[in-house]
Image (cartoon, rainbow, N blue to C red; front, side, top):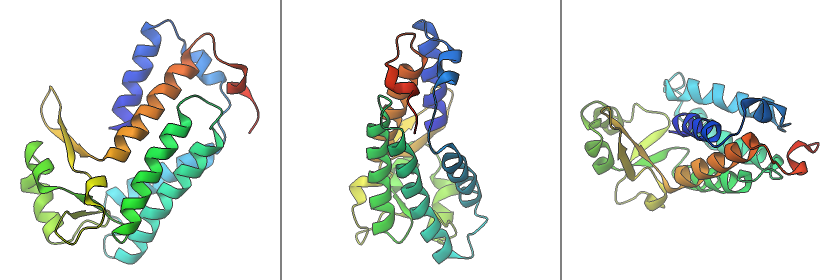
Length: 188
């Protein structure tokens, strides 16, 4: 969802007269941390560490905290504080549930992934997510929202994801704009 919204934000920024070169000129702080988070998430979401649930849970929680740190380093850019807040919300619910993001059965059913994802979640074969149950802590912050794509399928997502995506959307619009504040290019 974050990748799709970033691409859409860049397209809208272009339509609004912004340029990709403006975005490329922005000095981002903590870039290695952001790439490390993305790489580790790919490993986690492909169940590379599914057998080591404790390690996967600690890593999953830690990744969001590193993301919060990297976003906070860039707080001078409009939208980054909001994005950091979204990452904090996700960190809280993941930490409260042993390193796993709770997912609502209804959300998976609405987007048509219950038949495949549900079986994996019921058997606890997913190192990053769990099903929402009566014992789930802060379930309302989990992946309980859903969105169907016009081309089919869809995604379940959390309130933290919404805030994170909104912050990144604002940041991209700001960075692509021709009249950026001078603080955008300030040093880290």
